[in-house]
Length: 71
Length: 71
Image 1 (tube, rainbow over the protein chains, first blue to last red):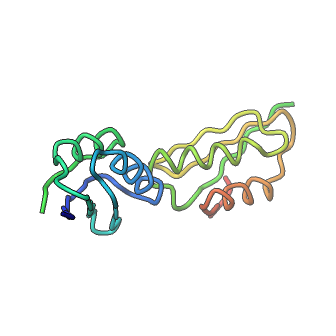
Image 2: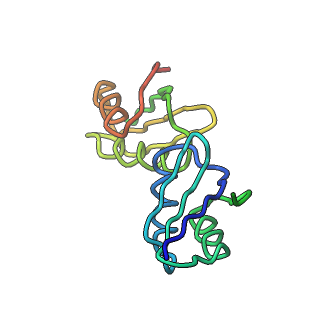
């Protein structure tokens, strides 16, 4: 089962920010793909099964940013 | 003889950008200190002698940003 979740992330301003988020989120258990739309502040996470949203939020915070909502 | 020069840099948006600029400018011949004021877009370069402004401009561009004026 593949899964996709979208999060709105606050504070990303440039390509370096995108790289940081991708790196941290990519390390979360079950995550197989990470895409970021910088202009819209959107983070899309693909998985090969359920991915714990709390772990995604924690990874985003570890990178230095904040999840403001989950779509 | 110590020298100090200030440049206005366009495009830096976050701490990662500051780090990139500091790294590149810090490698320029004669540069002994690099400070960046992100909010104001100001780059202050200290040297132990004359530092070639063209080399500073090139280093900033290598980091991905642009010098718009020198003060």
